[in-house]
Image (cartoon, rainbow, N blue to C red; front, side):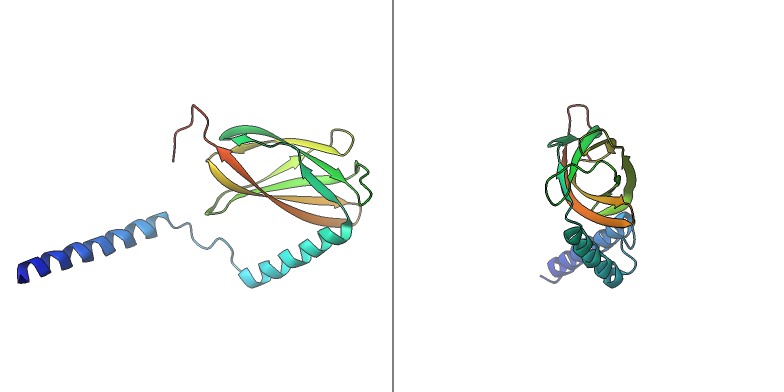
Length: 155
């Protein structure tokens, strides 16, 4: 009985040690350095977006791993297209800052902006649109899902 208890204890300790080693080797570090201040900035950005009256509509509905075209529509409070804004898209993968990047969305016509983005992994992505028009700035956030395509190596 004592031998069985020792074997079970050794297996349990080994499992904990392996879990700690794997966790430490895959942890990317702190994703947000100052979470409280980041939260305050996020709240202020949400208020600025609501006050601006701008509406961002994601026109692209499906994404796959690899290169994708992303199109958005920008309109004002009355629904008229906004053609004189600058839109920068900030892309992030929730579990790692390794994939964070910014992609400009050049203006096309009638309030439509379009750009290319590379999604290196399948799964949920956070997309933030930073819109600057004159001296006003607002941010709008969306989530997109990248599906694996036929030629994708699964991670």
